[in-house]
Amino acid sequence: MASSQLQPPRWRRHASKALLASILPAVLLVALLAPLSAGAATSVFGSPLSGPTTLSTDNLSYAGVNTEVPVSPEAPDGIIHTPHFGADTVLWSTSKQALAPAGGQVLKIRLEGCAKPAAGGPAPLREIHFQALTPLPGGGERVDITSQGFEMPVCGQGANGSTISTYEPINLCVNQGDNVAFNDEGGFVERFYRSGVPYQVLAAYRGANTDSFIRSEGTMNGAVLEPSFTTAMEGFAANANEELMMQMELGTGANARYVCPGGTKDAPPVLPVIHIHPQTDGVNHARIVEVAIYCRPTSGCPGTATLSTSGAGRSAGRENDRVSFNLAGGTTSRVAVRISSHLLAQIHKHGGVAATFTAAVGGQAFSQTIEIKIL
Figure 1 (cartoon, rainbow, N blue to C red):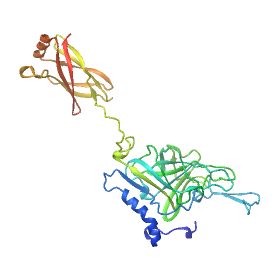
Figure 2 (spheres, rainbow, N blue to C red):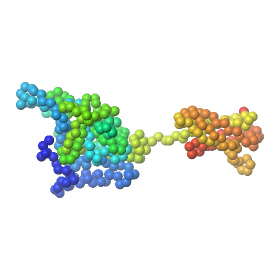
Figure 3 (cartoon, one colour):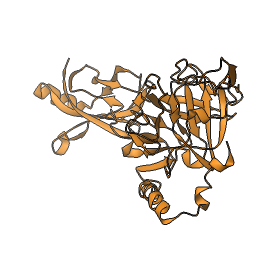
Figure 4 (cartoon, rainbow, N blue to C red):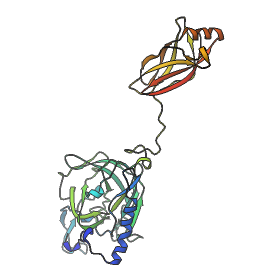
């Protein structure tokens, strides 16, 4: 890429008043949405979208191939250059500002640009996706999750390099430090889209860098985007001085769904570790009552239990010694409790007594009223 195409670094640019007027809204947007503290629920990361897109996926750093063809208006010198395969492509920025600042849910993605149609050709493939990428210790990225499909606008059909489209992916979860990538499906069509549809989503900025990876069916969930895989037409490429014009809005805590790291929105109710249902239990001649308890955790439920009665004076209070138990998980078990002789006398006298059974598990107490009768 010729140096004359590059804009100077944005933090050193001498801008006119008109240029400042166009940049300030984006800068203010970042300032307003950026987290004021570690507990803030939303923030933005990625590109500040401070200028129009000027480059497309045809401007990536692959060598491409030259093919000799008969001289024609399409190839006046008898050479057709194909920049790369028209296959599945992933683009992601490598700047620190493009990394997810925390774990959470990507709520919105603002993408600048459009899909460029071929002159005299069919309509370009417009479907795109967004992906969460996790950097790997040895280099490269792993595709963790891919969004549902979205459609880009077409250049010249109500859209241009300054058009910003907003997309809302479903459950696009990220961990802190993850990248968020632009993903297309190539869109190869012989003669018209030999290197796939040119998606104009890049801009020339000195110091920026956007990595890319191209491979047919090689960018799906679980795929490793390996930097050592490089060829003239596919694989990995580091695209210096090119910025992916894409900005993400991140939700955390209550603004992120519970399926995402740190998210709590829409979380199902937390069920107690044990459940004691209302029941009638018999006491045998040895003053033993067995109370049914359901234990949810598969690891089991160790704890203690007591039985008490209400009322006043001698008829109230704890009516058994504290007993220990260790219940099997995922099933209903019975806890044997030896009641006091006083409670047994009350049961004989009244034909049955309502008592409160209390079980303590993991520092939490769970109580239920049970009816005790003679077997």
